[in-house]
Image 1 (spheres, rainbow, N blue to C red):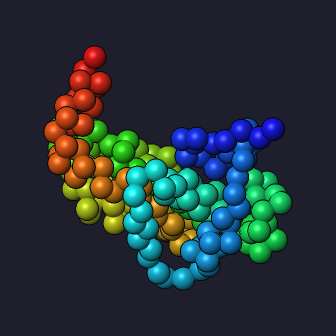
Image 2: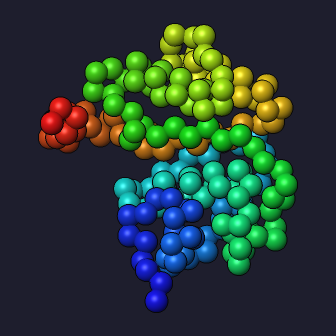
Length: 170
């Protein structure tokens, strides 16, 4: 019997660990059909946004084997891959300054592409990162941002912020 993937945010884990997966790849395809559009997915917490972004990442990365037997398998051009920049604000320790933490996260992403960022502000470094990845690969860049509201939620809910700071210290 297949397992229920409660709390699993990684498409690869769901597909390779014998979990139940309700095929939503038709909708992912509709989001991913090449265009110059940007999409903003706003849903309540625990509604599958992170899993959806991870699925999109796997599609653009060309990981066809993960999509065997799913709707998108024979619809997508798996030979065409794109560089994916994934940024999750959940993983950014912003308590001591969001700009500084964001810049550090962008520099880590740049390192994974073997790129050095020259800019010292997060907003300019983000633009530089996208431009340099596009230049290096010669392809359009897919940018996926997750948990964009995490810093705001942490500051609105002081208990949540205090809990995270304590977890980092102890």
